[in-house]
Image (cartoon, one colour):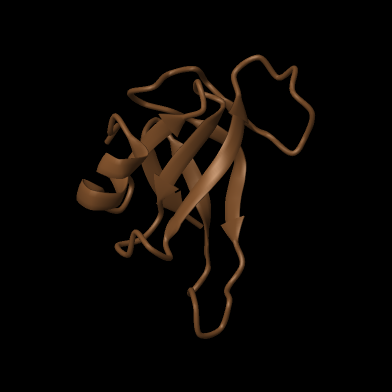
Length: 94
């Protein structure tokens, strides 16, 4: 679900919630239940004109799709890692 601010995402967010920051050039996404270690901020572009690495965004704030997949590598003692997609506003785990 779209939340308005990073603060709201941190305090009220649940797995699969997101918000846009930096004038819609980044998306913050909760891929787990712990906002401290299971949130990622990705650079995005709906025009495709920015330099990589940027995720392509469909421009829809309510039901965003970004490509390619999101890969968070496991860091022992810190996070379990995660791999999947944000498609039509839903997390799809691989």
